Amino acid sequence: MENNVTISTHNGSQVARQHNLRNPKVIAKEDHIDPNGHFEVWLDEDPRNAYERLFGKSVEEYNERQTREDRKITDYYKQICEDKKKKPVYELIIGIYGKKADGTPICSKNDGKRILRAFVEDWERRNPQLKLCGLYYHCDESVGVNGSQVGHVHIDYIPVGDGFTRGMGMQSSLSRALEQQGFESQGLNNTAQMQWESRENQFLATLCTHAGFEVIRGNGNKEHLDTATYKKVKELEDLEKREAALVQSIAEKEQEYLELQDDFETLKAKKSLSQSVLEACVETDLNIEAKIIPAKKNPITKQETPELVLLKKSDYDLMNKRIGITDWIIKALKELKHTGEKLTRELNQRRRVAELQERANSAEIEARAAEVELANAKAEIADLQQQAWEQQEWMESQVTRSGKSIWEFFMDFITKQHEREYFERDER
Image 1 (cartoon, rainbow, N blue to C red):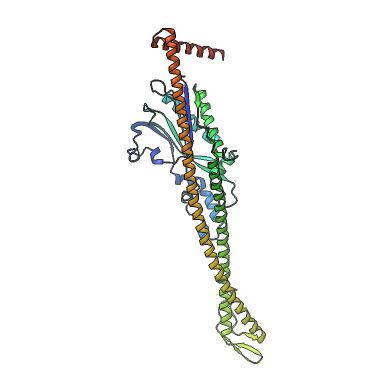
Image 2: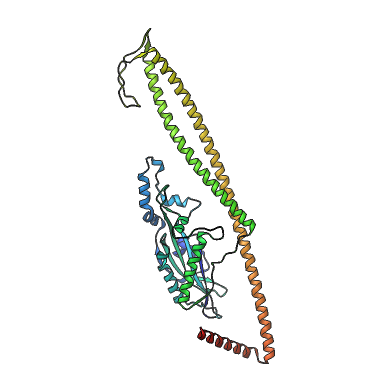
């Protein structure tokens, strides 16, 4: 039918801001883009500025709670860019497709633009946790065998999750943002992101229906993963959990090491003070009388030491004993520090191994998914070829039976088809 269209809502692609802005240096290398074609920039905000607008206050509040300078966040945008599990900006591409027999789009440019504009204008109501930083309307890319130009929109957004108890109170997190919008993962084949994409796809289909088009196919359905791929995915999840546990263990050991280092410096100061007092003392029969020494501040108590110190023999022996214990503690702390450094190196090595394993698993999963898509495409082509062959045989048999020319028979068939659709609409 002439009003049947297909739609697409594809999420997770790599954001290319200069491509979206149609930077001449970038599109010069992209043959499918017409340099004289039409495009519009509905919204464009530099991602770094957007992060300052969205997370600046949260970063400031977090830094105010920190007592150590090395734990403060100096560049949150850069921190997210370097996070291998996150993207600073995510992108959803939406489009309406379908061609008539002459190769022209079923949905005109004006109708398509109006529908896509309505989709993004309602974005904030549907997605309060996914903050927009870019909207780019493109109607200058040639697709399809006839090279017809269709309009689509790149929607760039930043996921904002709040209510975190560790770290910043508000963070860039797609999983938390979708959870706060009511989407919770229910297994590998029904994740929160899949549920959200399906909702967005259905909303675009509803807009098309209200505009008088019938959506005959979307991109919401996904093939189930086979057993081998499912096992790989589970292994990847287990590796991620183990990696998270290693990261937590490293953080705890680092904190423990810093605390022990503080204790070590304190004991060194105590030993230095005790040794200076003993060196100033001379032993007598009954007492140990200190020499007269200049007054100076104690580095521990911040108080001045007396000019004359009198110690009993028992106190002198006890002080010597404590100095011995202090030496032993310092040696033990050095050994503990060495052990901590060795553990940190081992954990870093395990983490690198886990990262390499994760990359390998991801590559294998993508390859298996590509094989599934290729097999599905081949099967679909075979079905279409079979249908075309059966249709051709049926047409030839009908033409032979009717005794009419092919053109006469085809025109009669089209006329009857339109009459049947007309009566069906009247009945509805």
